[in-house]
Length: 197
Image (tube, rainbow, N blue to C red; front, side, top):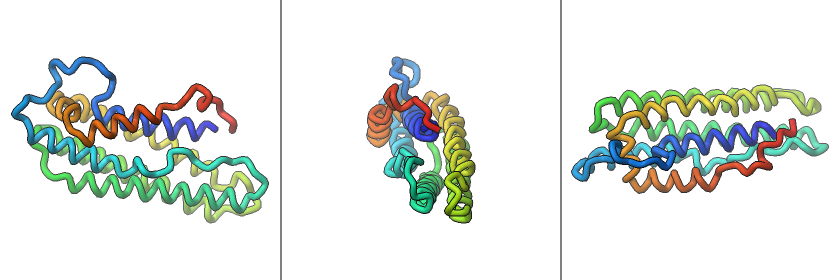
């Protein structure tokens, strides 16, 4: 299913971007040994952003002959995603001031993007719940739109990654490394790319 691939790729992209992924050398981007404030800050940012990691990554399948169950499963998934992104957005707003120039505005942009994504999932949940249970595709367009919106959260993460001090700090922060390991373990297999919609 296309939405499964989009969700998996989006989560993997976010986790990689948040941790300075890519596997290149860190010669000019590594945090200075005495820059523990930036490392601690990025540790808080990665911990805050990771709140959505525990949410289900794969939307429920659309196969089956019980439209009411399919609708309920998809609405539950949309609600779980809305809650997870809201939790991350709230935690990002509580990270505190950045010791590095652009960090505050970049983390604020991340929080805003996460809030927007949470709103899209909450809206999709409402539309799915309001759809006719006898219509197997009722509300699914809203669900697809919400899942596709996850592509947007890569933009502020790229900006954060473009700040050398923060990128270097993310490479040293333990919570960022944990996110990176999760991101690598969630890379989709080639078989996941086959759309079934």
